[in-house]
Image 1 (cartoon, rainbow, N blue to C red):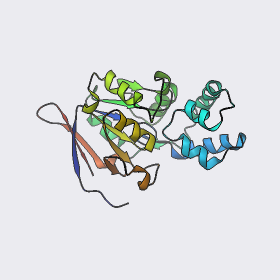
Image 2: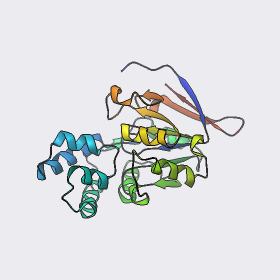
Image 3: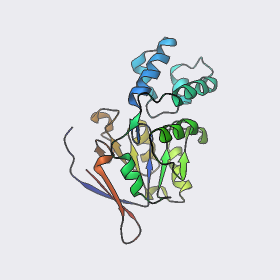
Length: 221
């Protein structure tokens, strides 16, 4: 992946996806969904592809409509929350979050609150003041509801928010909400992230500061 030129964005707040953006759970997610797919005679590769960026509930409904999706989701989330063997912070995540004022960032994830809080805590990352999780929306990504709810919790207009995402479904969700989306190439190949407004390797390529008028100035690259 070539080093991108620097770009500057201005916003009132930043909305972060969790998996693949703040916490590298790629190996954990792939291992779990391949195992689950094998149990249900589903293509492991298809299961992993569908699962990234989507709520577990919607993944189960897409891949195994014959199952009780709500019951299966509870079982899956409990197992995933206890799996910390292949998790680590995304490079630069702690430094970036530590540089942001409280109330100027939120986490918008396709995981449940239980799963998300466990993954943040297990990786030494702070809990946000504003949190949107799978159990708090009626429609998950790529629908815009999760990111619209994130802006609402921060009492901001959607266009005032900048999003960091790793999945095509999340980028689509952010754009549908009227937000700028920066992609991290941590989970998907570059070709599948081309519709993002910028693409970076990880959060070590991001710096943020408050400028004179109280807006966040975010430099990427």
